Length: 140
Image (cartoon, rainbow, N blue to C red; front, side, top):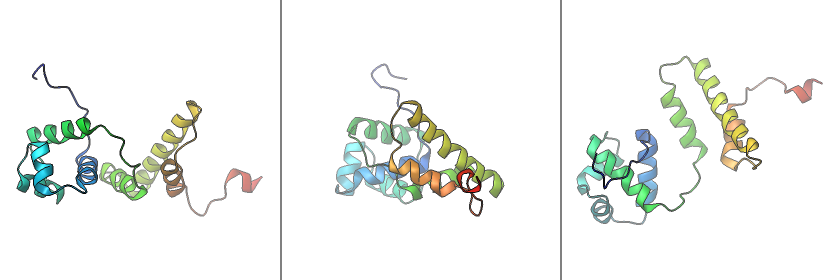
């Protein structure tokens, strides 16, 4: 790796695609592609679902990191889709448990830092809460 290039954490492709799509809103395809240093066709194909080459993926991630401004919080649908993709090889019950575990982990992380969990975390916890079972407070 070149010493002049900073290492950027690798995002899962669906999350990378969503982030790039959010950041390119309001930019022409040519302008965004120019900033990223990819071809307009390559950017369009990526946004429509193609898997980028490793070099292109690095450019996309570096471009996102360089933009550096805070992006909007994730939408619950994006999180559920991502968790479903991560759990593709699991049974439906295991996938639901993975979702509950991730949601609980996020909620506990905010709690441990004495911060209120953001709305998207609370929505994720509610989404993965088992249905049809009474909570401990309702049983007591």
